[in-house]
Length: 331
Image (cartoon, rainbow, N blue to C red; front, side, top):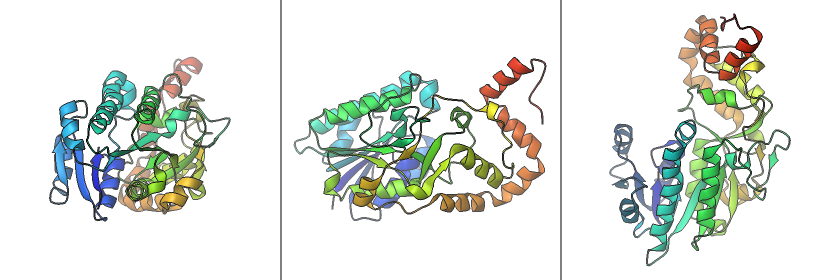
């Protein structure tokens, strides 16, 4: 039995990880901030885990949570778009919180190990060179504060003197996270993406707790070749599933460069953790089931849905203003 601390257990990846850890015979402690949403989720697990409410910016609360643990799985983070809107706030949690966790670990009489979830974002724009290896050097886009923060966290962890493993996560999908966000327009249509279902990420992290060979490794966590697609094809498929139709969003609505994602080599992580279960088609089928009822209504109001989405794209607004100043987004 391993004594595990999971940070950010009620977020997307954190919850998937918690659900997998509960299937193993481990002593599980979780650390998260006390919000109404988190309290509601925590009620489902209060009899199965040791619950610590706290802010990872608060060293004393972090030290209490870390005390007596064997392995820390650190998934807590502020992610885009909030990380882009409030970069200083995000850094205080992403970098400051990670620093607190490392310091608390260093001050333990028996030093725990840490598994840290980083991101494909650290590689920056890979339109011209989409195949990414874990040995490729980080090269965050100049305006990507989240990616820069992940790089700082990795450096803190690698220089800590502790035993660590860094998992760089790909484009994570979940049928519980299907909201259309303006961030969708930041990815160029020609981007290569390799999804990974959040359930597989949780499975990988839970397996990692019991895998000695991960320590000191930087590993990619992605879905494998059966999860690879271009963003254009992915978006067309998703739009069709939702009932909006294929190729309804013009190319002018999307960025031309300056994002991230690519095809991530995962030979070593898959060999060690054996986590790649769900394919891209599995995900599409799950989404179809999830939106089956709402799809009927979306199809009835397809022009309105299209207009609603295009209103989220500042690129399309700029295009209209520069080419047709008198125009508005039309149905």
